[in-house]
Length: 177
Image (cartoon, rainbow, N blue to C red):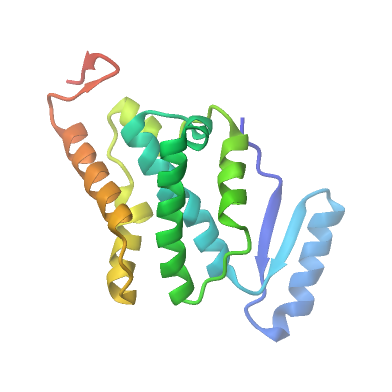
């Protein structure tokens, strides 16, 4: 069970600062984590960084987070994908406050968790590949960043998604009708 115990609050303008800090203090007094941020874009990229990496790898390999992070070849694949994505994010002004290896270690610490994309594969649902990886491949073109690894995974997961939508796909050994 994954339990959320915190909030991210954003200061959009200096005039909101006092009000946002008061709200943060109220949440903190109630026992929640409530960080105040000035840069929501970097937080979005941090979340996307993990999703665009671990979801496609798990969908293709049927592996859990710990398996992806501990297997040397997929660990290296994840690191390469994250490096390519970080280059795009930084060109767009995002900062990455968590080092890549710490982000991978964080995913590993979650354990035998199946990503949402792997869960969708297992039940034959359409995959959310465009919102997680496709958009980043598009941003690579806009920022003129070479992303061969992201493109390769995007191609593989896009074909997997097409195959899942085919009437003849087999999920966990059973024909989906």
